[in-house]
Amino acid sequence: MKQAFFCLTTLILAAVLFSFVKPLPAAKKPNVVIIFMDDMGYGDLECFAGTPWHTPNINRMAAQGMRFTYFYAAQAVCSASRAGLLTGCYPNRIGINGALWPTAPIALDTAEQTIASVLKTQGYRTGMVGKWHLGSKEPWLPLQHGFDEYLGLPYSNDMWPVHYDGKPYSDTSTNPRRKYPPLPLIEGNKPLRYIKTLEDQSELTTIYTERACRFIKESKNKPFFLYLAHSMPHVPIAVSDKHKGKSKDGLFGDVVTEIDWSVGQVLKTLEENGLSDNTLVIFTSDNGPWLSYGNYAGNTGGLREGKGTSWEGGIRVPCIMRWPNKIPAGTVCNKMAATIDLLPTIANLCGAALPVRKIDGVDMKSLMFNEPGANPRDELAVYYQVNSLESIRKGPWKLVLPHRSRTYKLNLPGYDGFPGAQPEVDVPLALYDMRRDPGETLDVQQQFPEVVKSMLVIAEKYRLALGDDLTGAKGSERRAAGKVQL
Image (cartoon, rainbow, N blue to C red; front, side, top):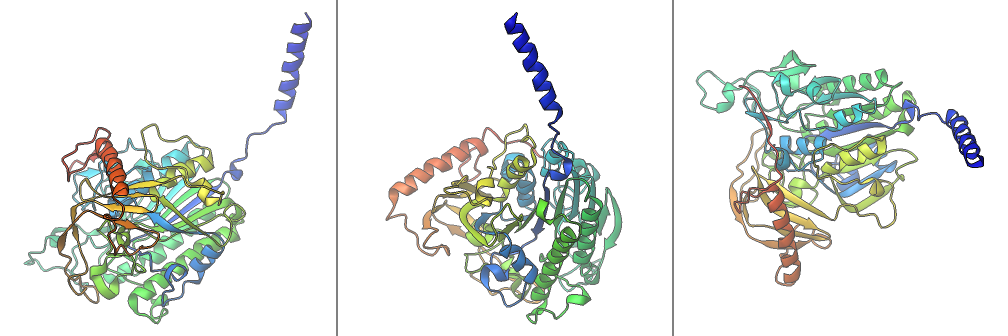
């Protein structure tokens, strides 16, 4: 009898206490903004490499947050990199490789969960502005991948029937780009207008910025996720009249100056709407610079090679994260992290469950909050081409596996929008110490044979799971991309 009375009393007391416990208000869930650049190199920002052009807004973001000096793209090319960012997977796990053409037969499968679809389970409003590049037909556009609204280009801004000089191809041209469809600026699922000239291209950064700021204002009373994926500084580069000549360092400098303005507008909008302290802002890039374009390309800050390669200049990208009173201001993280780590990190921060399907990212919250000894990612597989395992990062080491790679070293780059040659060369097995040799200039495999041996074991682990075209390994964990009806 006493036991029954005690249990009843306990239940009543628990019910009373529970009545005073309110669920966490939606406004307390952090907002998330990802600003994703296109072909911006590690050395293109003043706060990373001391560039000739001034980027005060990005500098301020770094001063108020954390710079990541060993931050890696999922792959050194457009579509694959974006697939990795949004899904937390190595792109080859989910069947996405390279840069998808307008007529590509594959797209990001709608069965794959994205950051947007994960956050929608927690009541987030989700918006995307800018370059998508994961399927250009309506069934594969952002609204079918968890985004509530979308305005932007379905693929790269150079995938249009226009020559490097900005003039349309003639009817007699043999260039395959002549057959590209008009480049649409899509709103929702339908074209809003078409980008036909370089002057049209010069409006893109402003259009994206204004729409991003509008989305923030309209979402201020509800937790939101904004993915702002700029088309610049991917060629053909263009800048609005209000920023022409501002950098005093040519068109590329002007483009970066306008990007800095855009970042400033986003930060200003957050501040004016009282959202800064509850918003995580992430700034990074899809891959390194396309060096064959010379003065219309960025720079790697001394890292080797560039876009389209598995050298550091192709895969290591600038990254800044700001979240006042959460991420320590003015800090630098020298630990390894990657874009595939953003989904699990954001899911954790926002109280969302991870995708049901297997992903490859790790929660990097401990790095962001500068916790002592934090090192959630100690290794990274670097794939390129369709499914070629080209290198492995482990601790301070990088093992480059034999493969063929483009190189920018054998020819002069192009000029004023015209590309130079980018021939392919054979790359032998090599080991680099990234602590002392970030430029990958000295192969030390003879001095550290045991390191090579242990890293070859790691490579085999990835081959068994994800395959490797270079060795014929098929991989047991790969999933198919979506099949596009052409």
